[in-house]
Length: 530
Image (cartoon, rainbow, N blue to C red; front, top):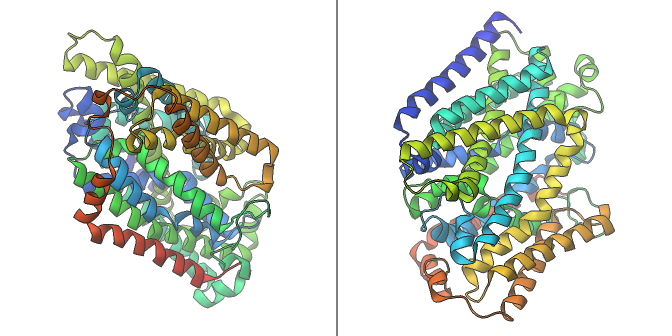
């Protein structure tokens, strides 16, 4: 790293802090802090959601998966095929209810519809699982920054953690969204520059394709993952992925909080629509970079020697270190920082929001002023920031296995979580105790499947199995209990008539999302079948 590189990195960090400090002047209370006064433009919210998805793990992991990981290649595109369909479900079913209720924490819905224990249990699950995930994500990103900068690992963890905590604490949701917009621009620019250099070093398109194994160019693995041992089965991604994405964008606080910050329901739907259409092209950029880097790796001894077999995710930072000129290296490190912090900031803000609204705020005095509540909100954010930094420092050498474990833990929980909200919105007889029984049944079934079948069952299917088990138990137990009070159903459920009217109001949008999913699948099939 040269002085020019450090100057570029310093300029980027200063711009992020300056923007957050400027936005902090508009904070007046805890609700404003967590949902930005519900006046943020929909396109900025869409870019913020997209930036959260393009984490440092994506910037590093997707190109390495496409280029080097055994069994990898363009089959990564299968992750994206049903995203537009998932957005259709979220926009039709979940946004009208959750955004319409003026929530800050999505788990508030569970108390309004069911009872307080249901809210607290599922909020606690979110806090524990996503808090650990945030620590692991910070550690993984710090490993990459260490490779690029040569700084000690602890310094990278502390530097990134403190930086994110400071600007997040200052500016709240407004800082999260507008810094994400800035970070998205830096990230796309970084991908483009890295791709241009890799393309040139690979010798152009013909040489690039000739240097890659044919199986890496196959975008679809025609398998189901139900006992066939497939590593990336298309049907596992299509069916399990649909459940995963509906739950993730619809009812996970880390993502849904941006929808809650929209000006109104149509604005929230537009933000999700843009995200659903833009994520596939962004993933194509990542995959294209992976193909180019794979070609460089195949023909360059220095790069092969620099990337150890047990750390294939260092492909991107080692390429930056070896082949990019001074100043440009700094921009690419800034892009990696942008990817890491755009994921960490939103997760930190959502952890703080759920903690304050679900656990802390009921214990505050009713006479507490908005300024007092804002101070408490910032304090909760700082505490969570410190916990995440400590978790990142403690995770140590087991981080690689933990990252994989966190993804699998998400698959264990997302189906039951979606069932809790889905039954509340669509089943007027659903009751709180039945929901908790359903969540427990879905989680128990997934644990049995994960330990009993192991690699025979592709883990994305756990999303579906958990959903079906939770829905079945919730439906059955609810019929054994007295029906809910009519007041609990007011504004918290959707009827079949309401869904038909919502479809009739915007048929072009819904058919457009279906067409996008079909088009993406067609493109993936055209790229090749493994």
